[in-house]
Image (cartoon, rainbow, N blue to C red; front, side, top):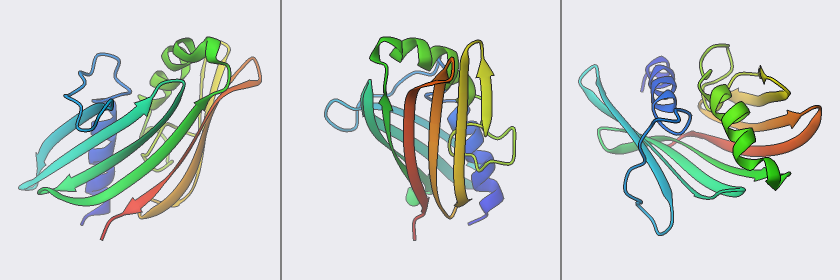
Length: 158
């Protein structure tokens, strides 16, 4: 598998699903899940990205990339909105706009950039290693107070 092609595909897929407020959800694949999917043909191969998550204020999810219907890459994540009064506001003003910036810096394209600011919100993402094996932490602060945190990990599937 070509890691550069995977990176490029992940950027397109992420900008076409949850991060994009206009992206349609697909029918739930599991009970009470929220699901997004993106597909394209690249160099004769069918790439499919599937994101499924459960919950809202506290949520858990999984992203999988398939090439020709075989799983090749995945990520699990768990997020907590610490101040539940801000859940939708923080998502609309900080999380989704930050996630639409995926691929704009040299951070691996699994969440957003290292830093993103919108009004009083500061988004940050730190990650170790590379697309083949990684762990990361995403945070949103409002006026320097932590209001949201997500932990993720994943890598290549062989």
